[in-house]
Length: 567
View 1 (tube, rainbow, N blue to C red):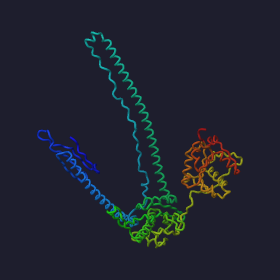
View 2: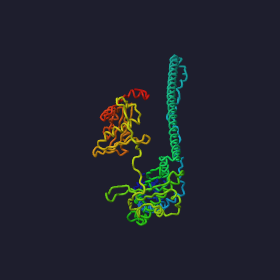
View 3: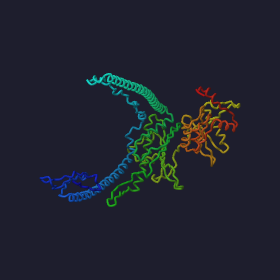
View 4: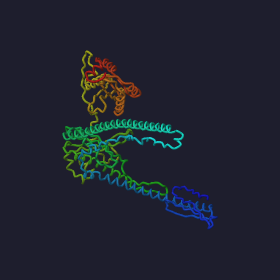
């Protein structure tokens, strides 16, 4: 019996039954053919029949063609319904976000903004990893062959000795094979146990390291808490950062800010990045146009956009001040200066700039007297003598009430390092901080002829920088990162990689690494095509001598003096 062929653009949506036949009583002739067809998506079923296969094929073709048309109509309706639903969702989402940002100030009034220090503490527990290799198994051992059965003909043909000899040999062979397998198992088991013990020792070390890191993190948090309670300026800034970072805002508010604290006046300056007007949810209605297959948007009026943007920015200002003061349980902050900043274009130059568009300086007691639940944000801002343009959406720059000091606070006062005029000072064993100041002094002399300046940074927060040089030369100058390494062993490539990373992150034009030792070949190879200069011990001595300073570098003596092992 031949078959029926089904052709469709949506064949996967069809379920095709088996072709069946009805025979006459004598079984010599087919009276009729039958086949079942189902459309899965449309939930349709049809049994087709015909006296001849070609007639049945025509019926199948006609039915499938009609079902294809119905399915395409169904898909179109479904797509229209989906698009209409999507349009409705876009409308609702935009409306919901506008309602949400209208309440961001009231929202924070229902939240306790004091820092829950436990949130900062790691929750992860150490999980020992199971040993990955399965334990060896002995498996089935070979059994000795059964004793041979000696028959009449074996006696008759005198094959008994030969049979016994062959059996004994087979027994011996089975015994040897058993011993080999047992020995191999014992060897594998011993190796497995050794590896497992080593794995367990590693897990113990990893657990110890994990717990040490955990303890260090908790100790750092405890130290931060204590420092904050005692009024340490850095801890106050860190605490305020945590408060603002954990504030729950809609996504269009990125929570980007800079903080600076002045301990004498107890003033906290906040530079807070405001959303841009283009971030606003300004869609009033979205409609799907069936005839064109497009979404058509209707926007809220420009007047309403201005009102929403102004209201949002003033709310962020007041909310930020409220959150910081509410969390400041020990009253370390007496005044807050809030500067709302935004990325914009300088209309005079066409260049991208960061502008302050609103600024407010407020006293703690004055602000805490305000009932934020019942105020109009803009009116409140104006009553506190805040500074801003009449409308904020134009991003008109204003002069902030209080500006943040943008100088690099890592810099510390330089000091001179005097060396013995005999030239016997061993640079490789001098105190590391003296070595850093000596390098700073050396480069200051090097750059002084062209008006350069070199500043040294604090060791506790240097971020990989020991000194920053500012070379005013218009061609070869710029910002230069200098790192001083008083080493007694060859400097590897990792130190040079670190210097390169620091040079990039500092936005410097060049990086210089100065050491009392020498550099390995990998270090020189890495630096060869980068804006890096590697100065070894010999280079350092030559540069010092150029500026009238004599010294020496004796690595072996330094290692002995510093109590370091090896040569």
